[in-house]
Length: 225
Image (cartoon, rainbow, N blue to C red; front, side, top):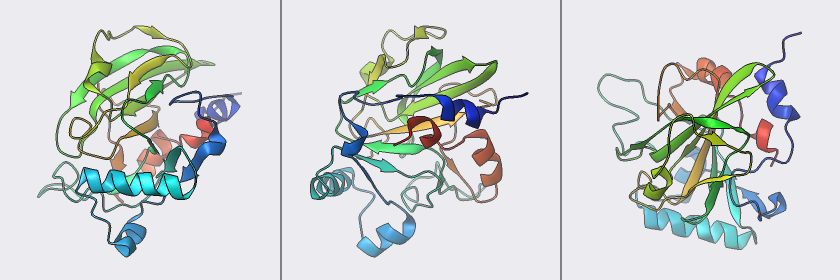
């Protein structure tokens, strides 16, 4: 019987990708959908205003981490030609899970694996420093992407370098190094990297969504927040 990637993800236990001392009971959901941010009249183009909004949300819910965003339609990307230009369809559907917490927070390997690739994706609104790990479980190869890291996170990294589940592999970056966002981790699961290295789309157009949902299953199957 062939085991699916989704089944493998669901079978994993006690997975964390940021600061292992923070219990999931101290996480709170965050809605950054276009409908909600339009209603709030929230200025998404100013990283400092955005971070103040996140901090207020955490404080109001007595929480330490805000999370969410898988398949969320967002206006967050309209400021950048990375997500829409004269020749591409608008990409505004988020296909990772975001974890919002302060810059400098440790980022952990979700599972045993090796470094597939890494690079600094420097365009406005992009990932900034990014690390991608490769994992093999029950013969199935898949990848985890960690975006919006600090520059120091890329120091002394080598492709093929082994990592252990729960090992600190990076820290969260601050704006503008992290793509000019409020500090957070973009965490994404990718089955087929499509020959990409150090980068992979984290936002989809409506036209391509069916492919990306299949290739990038919900990270919360693994994290179980």
